[in-house]
Length: 257
Ligand SMILES: [Mg+2]
Image (cartoon, rainbow, N blue to C red; front, side, top):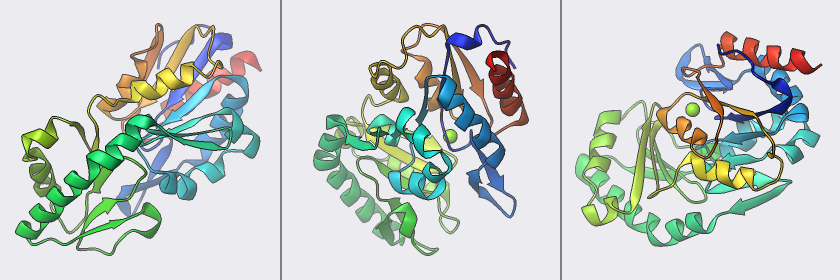
């Protein structure tokens, strides 16, 4: 792990899934929040500017994450979800204009394409939230506020889903960004990136005079968080809340305690 440069003026950006989670031993594709790292994170929030930036939905966050963050800390640290198209800050949920336009103008076309292609492949698809996810056997479109997520399903070959999305009609493909990851596929407004969320966060005025930003991710799209920052260190956590990450964060906390 990298050396700490100046812990008094450090800021932190975390992806959640694969960074603050640990796999469930009998369900390797699924994960839960790591309780050890949460203790550290709750301490960090009090002492440093910190934001969470995830592709996950509000529903997933409610069920898996937000309850583990101390209530006072929830007011301090913004949670950017759906790649920053939606965010929760000081108890207020905001859906960005970019997200709303996508939801209204592009999402319905994507959905009818997927429905048609699913029929050809003999799948039926269900559109449900994470908190009410469908039984095995269907293609699961996860209901979110803005973006479209297709979750990999144990009964449907992920490659088939990837191919289906690769063959999107050009007129539609030109308006979207496709992100593939180990849980499935995310389809976002073109040009959307996790750096948008960081830019919004920097405007909250919490983040002035930061010497070094420490950015933690497990997917190539997470590195986009570093784009608006002048000085940063990126940590690739390889789909786990690693011992290295915990040690590093603990050492930062011990420097200023
Ligand atoms: Mg991740």
